[in-house]
Image (cartoon, rainbow, N blue to C red; front, side, top):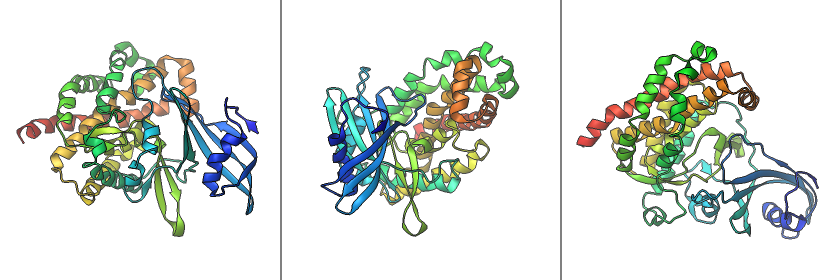
Amino acid sequence: MAGVRIPGLDRGRLENPVRRLLGEVAAVVDHWRCREVPRWLGGESSGGVFRFEGRAQTDRGVRPWALVLKILRDPGDGLDWSVEQRFYQSRLPTLLGSGLRSPACLGVETPAPGEAWLWLEDVEDALPGPWSAPQFAEVARGLGRFNAETLGLPELHDFPAWLRGGGLPTWVEGRASHRSFVASTEVWGLPLVRKVLPVSLRTRLLDFWDQRELLLEALDRQPQALCHGDAHPDNLRVVRRGRGGTETVVLDWASMGRAPLGAEAQAILGGALVLFRADAAEAAVADAAIFNSYATGLREGGARIETAALRFAYCAAAGLQWCLDLVSWVLLAACDDPFRRDMEAHRGCSLETMLEHRALALPFMLGLGEEARRLLPALAKG
C-alpha cells in the first residue's frame, strides 16, 4: 500500500468492494494506493473522499481496478448527515431518467456511530472543462424525467426524516450572514472590485434578497418533487459508452430532498456559473436550453404544470440560491490575501478574471430572480 492511510482500513476490508467491482468473488488484492480527492469549501458532513487504485489476482489473471471511498460523518449540526447513505440503500437510483445514472454502489459500511463509508464506482470525467448548451440540455431533460417520476412516490408523500424538505429555505438561511458583508460599501469600494463590478449591482442584489421570504412562501405552494438538489457540473460526470455515445453520472446525493418543480433545473446553470464551469457571456443561451429541455423531460415523465408556474419556480430558486454566492466569495477574496491565493490556485485564474466573470454572471442571475418577482402577482391570481 502507498499514499494516504485511513484508520481501520486493511486489505480484507478493501477486497469486498473490489470483488463486487470486478465480479470476482475470489479476487485477492495484491497492491493498492490511495489518495485523497481535494475539496474546496467542502460539506461539513464529509469525512473525506478517497480514490483507490491497484491490482488484484483473479481467476482471469491480474486485473487493474479503481474505486472511491466516501466517508460521511455526523457534524453535530442537527441536520441528517446520512441522506446519501440512505439514497444508495433505497430504490431511488433506479428512477433516474435515461441518459443519467448514479455511481454504482459497491457497499455501505457503518464502522462507528455517526459514520458511514460509501464504496462507489470511480467515474472519470470525459468533459472536465466548461459545458455547452446542448450538454446542459441533455442533463436537464433527464432530471426533468426523474423529478416527474418521483411525484407519486411514497418516499416523497410520506416524507421520511432522511429526506431534507425545504432544502432551499435552509440554504437561504445559511446565507443570511453573507448579506451584511455583501452590503458593505467599503468592500465594493476596493480598487479592484470598483474597477470591475458596478456598484449598481449591489443595490439590485440587496433589493432582491430582501424579498426572499415572499418568494420562499410562493415556492412552497408550487408542486413538489424529489430532487437531487445540487446538480451542477462539479457533481456531474460525462462518461463514454458504446458506439460513441455518452451518459451523465450524477454524484453527491447529500442534498437530495423535496423541492418545487423547476428548482432542480436552475441549479445546473447557477452552480456552473458559481464554479466557473460555464461561459457567463453565453448564460442566456444555456438558460433557454436548460429550461425548455427540463420542461420536455417533465412532460415525458408524465408531469403537467403551467409554464408560468414552472418558470417562476425556476427563476425564484435561481436568484435565491446563487446571487449571493456569485459575489460573496470573490468579495471575500478581494479582502483576504491568503483566501485569494487559495481561490486562485483552485480555480486556475486570477481574481480579476473571476470578478470579470461575475460582472456578467451576476446581472444575469439577478435578472432571473427579478423575473420571478414580476411573475408572482399573476401566479397569485391563478
